[in-house]
Image (cartoon, rainbow, N blue to C red; front, side, top):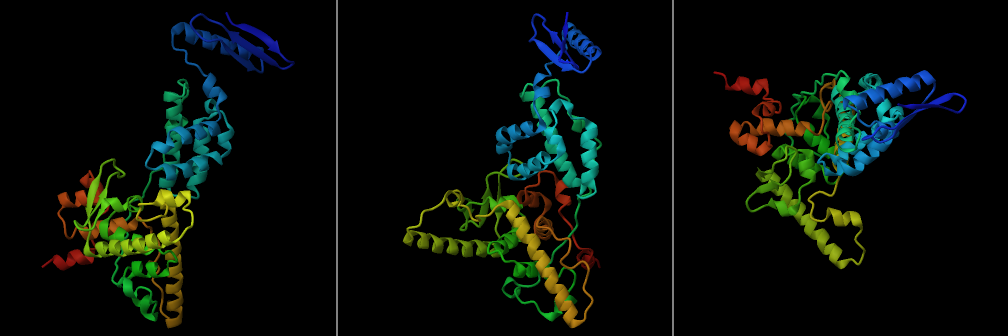
Length: 383
C-alpha cells in the first residue's frame, strides 16, 4: 500500500515500497493526484508491466543530446553533420524539458516553424536525429518507459529530386576570363568554369574538377588519402563510403593530371617543411597523408560563395553589354549537383552494371535519380 504524506503547504508525496521493485516516490500538487499516481504504479507492478520512469523524469533533452554526442555520434560517418543538428536541438526551448515531458505536439510545433524557413528534407533530417536520440535512450540508457514523440509526428514529404545539369565547355586554363559575351551563352555553358574562376579558395578548383570527373561524393573526395591514390593504375580507392562498402574509382586523364599537380605541390611543401624548424601543430598532424586538408562544410561554403560571386560578375557583364541575363544561369547550383553531372556523363560511356561500380550505387533505381540526359542530346540520336 502506498504511503501518502503532505510535503510543504501545497504539495503531496506518494511513496511505494514493494518487494522485487525499487522504491518509487513522486511529489504532486494535490492528494488526489498523488493517490492516482500511486494506484497506477501499483497496478503496473501487480501486472508485471511496470517500467522505471525515474531516469526519463530526471534527464533533460539537453543532457541526452550531450550524452548522445559523446557516445553515439563519434561512431557515425556523418558525425560532423550530425553535430550541427544536435546544436540546433540544443538551441530550442525544448532542450530544457525533461525527456518524459516532451510530447509529439511539442515536436510538431517546431516542425511547422522550420517548414516556413527550410526545405522539407532539412526538417526531416533534424527530426531523424531527435528520433534516434529517443530510441537510444529507451534501448540503452535505462529509459524503457520512454515513448518516442517523433514517431507520432506527421513527416513532411521531401521533394529533393534534382535534375540540374552543368556543362563545362570552357577549359580550366581560360576559365578565369570573364568576357562581355558570357551573358550570351547557354544557361549551362561554362557555368562550372566561371565558378572556379570566381573562387578565392586554392583547393576548391581541384575538388570541383575531381567531383565532375569521378562522380565521387564530397565526403569521399575530402577523405581521400595519398596512400589510396594509385597514379600508375589510375585508380582512387575508397575504403569507407556512405553505403558501408569500399570501391575503386577509375581516374580519367583529367583527374589523373589533377592528382599529379597536387602531388607536386605536396612534394614542394614537404621540402619546405624539412628546411623549416617550425613546430607542426595538432591539426597539421591530423591532416598528414590527406589529399585535401579541408572540412566538408568548408567545401560547401566555398562553393556557395563562388557561385554567388560568379553570378554577380555575370549580371555585371550583362549590364555592360546591355543583354538580358538568363535567370537560370549560375542560380540554384549546389556542390552535390556535380555528382549528378558526372553520373550523367559517365552513363554515356559505361553500361549500367559498370556505372554502379563507379558511383557506388547498390540499387539501380537510385542510380537513375542521378542520371539526367539532356533531351536535345537524345533527340540527336533519332533518325
